[in-house]
Length: 440
Ligand SMILES: Cc1cc2nc3c(=O)[nH]c(=O)nc-3n(C[C@H](O)[C@H](O)[C@H](O)COP(=O)(O)OP(=O)(O)OC[C@H]3O[C@@H](n4cnc5c(N)ncnc54)[C@H](O)[C@@H]3O)c2cc1C
Image 1 (cartoon, rainbow, N blue to C red):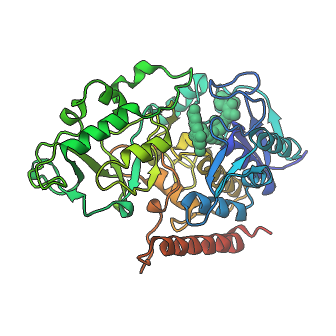
Image 2: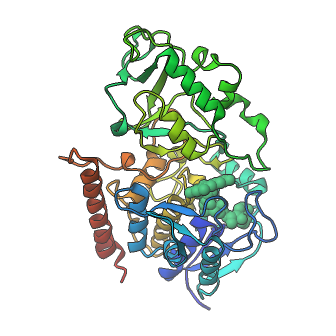
Image 3: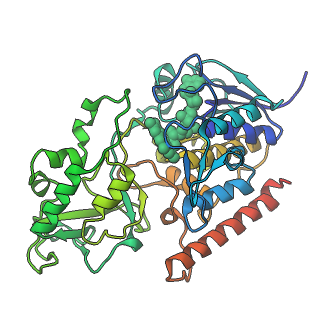
């Protein structure tokens, strides 16, 4: 009888396929459970694995962009998903977009033809014995969801609408003023608006295009977290009396030198203070529309949106409470989570977590130490972000330079700084591959 070590992976999505391939590459046998085609989430429609449920773009492929850098780190680490994306790419400027069906078919074929991977077509209703990687995605449901909640002792977060996040360095600080309401410190960034700026903004907001809601989303659940465009439609001055009220900010002045008619507030979003979210701006606007309309806010004309506001069902665990940076539960029980369910946001980010969880699950069963991907890499900064976030409200996070370890003596020029961050990250990845993973 073979004494090969086995790890179970639940879910053959972006994270699960990457995890299964990585485990097999490390000589570990894999039982990969996938419920399609017997049962599908409301967003999945294809029978193939690694289905892209919405856009066919894996976003930027440039090294001056954090998700572009993340892809290059994953390429060097031998990612199956990025390799298949490269092989099925379609023209998309500086982005890596794929022929959706061709991409999924290729990943499926590679997974199914791997002799170390056994695909089991069933819905997992109860967590199999450890070691196991749970990669069932943001639409995890039913008996498994219940069991995960029982295991963790708390409910999964239900993320219905989120406000965009911008990088501090992209703001025009000549128009932005630091202050908290009623002189309680200076924690917020304030963007004061004249009457004209406010009404022009509200008109644009009301007319902006929104993302169609998917059938599975129940509009009533969004009442408690109302999108800013819905609030604006309730009356011209609703926002000025709501999240944009100009009260308690006596030292803030609009561009005409007068007291502002409305004020947009930005709240710090990470420990380093490099990222800020737009308070009260949870939204369902299309991404391009968010850039256009929110770019009308004084100071945000050239804002870099590191995460756009989104509104869809998205269950995720409270990773800062439960996970270690290797995506394993803190009690080292051999139960790992990977993908969007951990609070990383996006296709490539899900792949990244699948890779890290699998490397460490494999190393654990092989009796080797865990590999800690540092925050100087994008792979590591995501892992550390979800497991160590210490703010009030943990929200899913895209790859971005703001969550990475800052550079000493960083160049002032943004592109030079990003180039330096990329160079440091790739050197670190190469070193980890050479010294710790010892992959050929
Ligand atoms: C509606 C929607 C649109 C999105 N659009 C984008 C986008 O355009 N761009 C982007 O970057 N990100 C997008 N995301 C976010 C995220 O990148 C995707 O959800 C991504 O697919 C997450 O990868 P994953 O591996 O975590 O989960 P998934 O890719 O969803 O994979 C989970 C897999 O697990 C299987 N599964 C689930 N439960 C079980 C079970 N009990 N037993 C067996 N199998 C099971 C599912 O069938 C599925 O194949 C979107 C998310 C949603 C919900």
